[in-house]
Image (cartoon, rainbow, N blue to C red):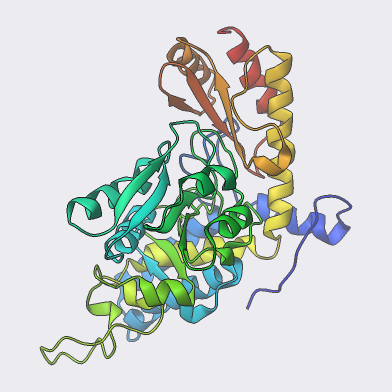
Length: 386
């Protein structure tokens, strides 16, 4: 097991600095990369491990299959440690979107509150279940509305069975108040959290959720093809494993032609064996984070995001993201009405990678490995389009 070591970015010791230097040294993204909310470039450690697993499969020596299959448990164990959920309440699925579909179809009836500005992966599952006569969606607000405890509380009805929210909003970088939402909905309704824009870089109390789903490809920096899914006892009790498969049942390798009972924990949401290259990459990336610690990574990201906001302010570029450190994560959005596409092209010409959000918005996202000089460079390019 990786040591339980946490580093505070303020007052860091020499050992702390060495830990972070080792962490930082395993990444090699381009200096102008400011697009972690889209995907996080995997480390050399992750890439090397995937190559090793591919070699293991290619050589096909005795025991190769067992070696490859063991990556599943390794990933679940690491996800358990970083999320705070017990191992038996942790499973794996193919993506955040797939996990949300599995949860949505597992609710037989009632209304699920979802922000109208959520990323579509958190709306389509509920639209589809409503059309199928199961749980239906109740949209709150409009794109850009912060899903705060007050907004949620005002929309609750006797028919509300769950609230589904992103821990960090993809559109603005707003960090949801999970504790406040938990208090607002009470203990009997389910809290479903899409953690993909914050897991492993935001030090949140994930166990407030009844369901946590977080894909590997963004801030975890493990590539595509796997997501962690964790559930509270209440979530396991109330969400039917309707979209499950042969690997999510007891005695999965007893091929007797009969339907087997679902597994007792979150493993019941397994549909089939996942790629060992995806689960191995997930495990490697999560274990790379552990020695440094999420609080330290979060602190550096917060410093970079604050510096980027300062640079944009100095350049006269409107900032559409929360300014309060406790309300934001690693996403900073610049408002450029009618000129965002031009600005996006200019940034690309300057070798700076960002996301274009429609005609008026540029989304920049920083990580702990971001080169500080690029923040001013990006702001300088955007200043020409204000």
